[in-house]
Image: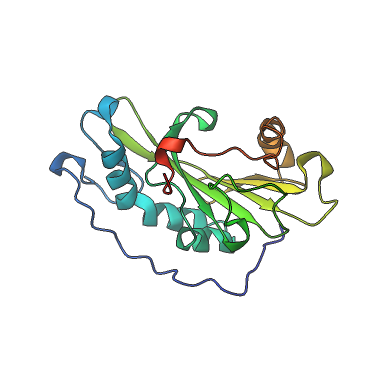
Length: 206
């Protein structure tokens, strides 16, 4: 696949963010999994603390794909305050990140299509009924040049597993596996450039 190289990938050495987890919520093992107590009542604050404890692991896992965006995206603007559960992403908890060209994302200030080069990334994790925290895929959408894929308004869709395996990429390897993403986004409300937005309750500028 063709990687999208950028001139500035700064701040890659993200440090562990020491938000206070309850004792029972601290990771019991290093790596992908941790266990939390009472997962059915996971509050926004606890979900954020869990995310802060695993976000660097998620980044390292996605970086195995070799795609430079996987290394850089957590340095971009994050317009949500805490993760939220998304039904269209398999009930996983997700976060949004947007590069400079997608700075209006999350502010409902579109009015016109995003420019070429705008990228929005979602990282994700899941919490099982027994309290296991599992890494989820990375979802990427990038605005490409005019005519790249008219049916998706020239958005490229890409998904990377926690193993680093690229599941699919629009007009590339495994394109059929991300076709559902494009079809879902094509149903977004008019005037949103085929994008959906996070719930009001988790937006930073509320």
